[in-house]
Amino acid sequence: MKLLERFDINTAGWRLASTYERFEQVVVLILTGLIIVVIASAVWHLAAKVLFTLILSSFDPTDPTVFQTVFGMILTVIIALEFKHSILIMVRRQQSVVQVRTVVLIAMLAVIRKFIILDISATTAAHVFSLAAAIVALGSVYWLVRDQDRKDEVDKQEASPT
Image (tube, rainbow, N blue to C red; front, side, top):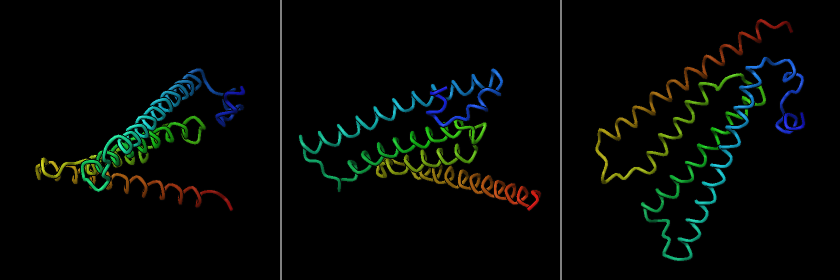
């Protein structure tokens, strides 16, 4: 029970949960642990790469290639952190499944990362257009889901007695 309390899991809800719900929670906790290991490793490698490059060679952050590489690695860590955060929300039982809005947000971050690391000199217009279309599509889905969530919230407030 201390592990459940440590992760801020409702222990009363744990006792009432079905076997499958408990299994789901354990799997989510394992995934969270694995993602933490991946994030820690990524941050370690990012810090080592930047520091060793600064010390051992001429690290020029104004060079577009260096800039793209460093920010691409940073955004990869941010995407992993957002993914871990969405899983922790599930663990705390604030939501029973991963929200579509969160998945779309993570996908948008991944496409934006692709834009940042894009080498303009070696990229075709069709490739840039396809990435732009993906961002517009994901943004539209995000807006629709957010709008529906707002409507659901308004309906709940109107239905509840005040």
